[in-house]
Length: 268
Ligand SMILES: NC(=O)c1ccc[n+]([C@@H]2O[C@H](COP(=O)([O-])OP(=O)(O)OC[C@H]3O[C@@H](n4cnc5c(N)ncnc54)[C@H](OP(=O)(O)O)[C@@H]3O)[C@@H](O)[C@H]2O)c1
Image (cartoon, rainbow, N blue to C red; front, side, top):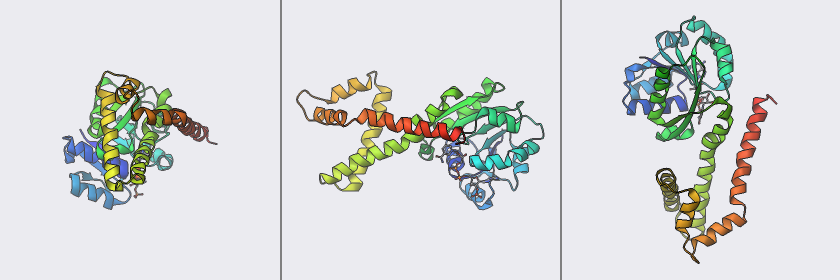
């Protein structure tokens, strides 16, 4: 099976690196990128096949991964349809905001189309990706998608109606988490610890806490209670966070992203 990537920028490169690390062979992956040097660099690193045109890529690919920017997709969608020439492929789009309806209208509603939203942590093989499919996608094709994206982290099927929510909780929230880690480290710097050390410790602690939430049977609030000894120090910090609106601040940030997303979707 040939996996063809249209666009070899940040996200496609991260996915391809993950695929090759995860056991896909370089020769199973074809790439076309307008700046050919990017494809050549990936070929040197991962052994992928370099295509010199979109047409060549589409002809070779069984699975076509659209990994260009959404505004580029608007410009080239007609040409992609021409190059497909009515041949059925499994088409995966990672373009933010491009719905299944948009993709079917642009590329043909006979195609098997999957919309995937990976996140930035794909670069360290820790993406939390979500996907939805049109009605043509078979169980085997879903397995192909899961196989590709599980090589850069986890992947979960979600209804398209929840894609905007997923966009905040998985797409934007890495930025929230980076900010939390940096704030924690900066507070440690204020108290006298060197920044580099503080950042590493804060990041590791968040990583461990995420693992704890995922792997223990306890609700996060039970875990909070486990860390807070009666009359101890940590409860002081928790109460301070609560007094200062920690949870409602997160909710407001979540709602702000969702509101902006709605505005963009409505074209305003
Ligand atoms: N980055 C993220 O965190 C993230 C997360 C979720 C989804 N996404 C989605 O992933 C897609 C790619 O994002 P990115 O961050 O990887 O962007 P990017 O680094 O700018 O990559 C896009 C690539 O597409 C190439 N390109 C432009 N026009 C082309 C064409 N006509 N044919 C072939 N290649 C073409 C560009 O090449 P040149 O260098 O020649 O311009 C560039 O290398 C976007 O749709 C984005 O919405 C990104």
